[in-house]
Length: 367
Image 1 (cartoon, rainbow, N blue to C red):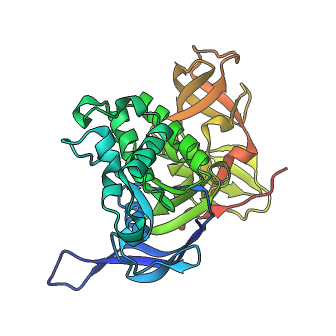
Image 2 (cartoon, one colour; image 1 turned 180 degrees about the vertical axis):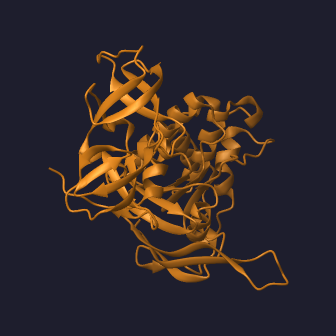
């Protein structure tokens, strides 16, 4: 099911009743979600991603704009008539019902031509349970399940209705790190198997990038960038996107362009042809550093963190906006851990320049 959002806007009344004010949670959102894709809505708390999800499913009405499922305008359609499956962060399972009864519950509310027989419901329930691999848990109650198992029950309950669209609102937030990894792999597998158009809301960029076909990065209700995860990571349009994506996070410096060269402090660290002389904000991905004793950028060594296949070289620099700089270096590299400073060359494709005031990307010619 293709989903089209046209100029979607949602405003809420301000809390101060004495002063007329509005808070814009979603501002002029335009996007076409391809049929059968998994899209991640990504951004910090309060950016409008959950509001967008609530608008799509019909729990909230937009202040402006339209929502289409395929060619159907569903903007004013009640939630129960939109054919969506919704999974929340807190699972919302009925504690007195078994797993089978929890999954079956949405089917028992079907009426008219959609009403199913007991045998049809049982077939649907076990089909949904099979998708999330919980067939052996059908007689248990939620209190007898782990967090990961409860989340699978919630997903099965959403799938049992055979929705046109599956909406997941922070579905992994209550799970520990290992379960989160396992469950997000399951979500991707289920989505590929069912081919249901799925929208996944999260503030965790690792989750979004690992399972999404497309990510939408939001800030303060405004879409910042849309694209394939790797493309957005490699080509951020502004400083916010560059800082939000990446683990470890991007290293940010105060810099200056003079005569086609980028300076950090007094050191000319990179040729940046095509950029006029100006102060800039410099972003360097952790993997953008090349260990080189006589390299153009020198940083004060703080410590070395062993990461297995890689080293994380932790340094400081007086022109860095980060408390520390993290450089990911191959573990086969030879490091002088007794040195006071480390020299680095930079990979041009891992270096981004941003306007000091607007924080928009400034592009330079790559050699």
